[in-house]
Image (cartoon, rainbow, N blue to C red; front, side):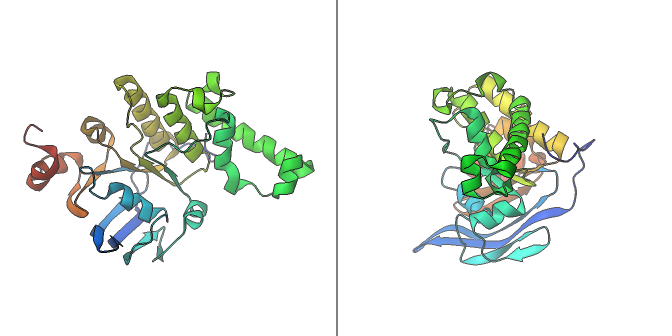
Length: 267
């Protein structure tokens, strides 16, 4: 799927993303307070917490949707106070959203093609009329997208309008659009929300395959604790916009503060 060759044997690398002392306020309300954690190359890093804990707000700060009032984010050694979403995407960070934002009247193929936008060099006019180099460029990008479609096992629906697909397949298309950007870091905001058990198993497999075979670093928000504990290398826990836990799944599972605030005694 990726332009580069798949990695053989996943190896957790050095820190690729470092979040330091992020504070985000909306008026007088603090959504995030002094949050710090890092993400290592090739790992699956999960962010968990109750509803309203600030998980999606944290992803929005990382990918430039929100601008925190305090703190900084370092990506591959470059430190930023503020970045917009396009800059983040150009640097190699892709994002899926909790609420699907697909083009429901467009086909699966065309939806995933929108993820190639930043990779296209020809102008809009040349693309519209498929002039010379633009046509050749489009063919190359379509070939790449077809490989993603094969990877996600949605070949049978490639020409189907996305709005006609069941929810689980729409989530897979959303993942495909993000993968089309060839991200170094992939931010997944509740990719399994609303899915049944079988759909969750499929999505977990695809996430692990992306991470393992292609070395893509994953930052994941998910409420299903079984999934989180099974596929994560490390987990950071938020509660009311503050960090209350950080470590391996076992360390988090046995953290008294996390148990009290979120997991509950039965875990």
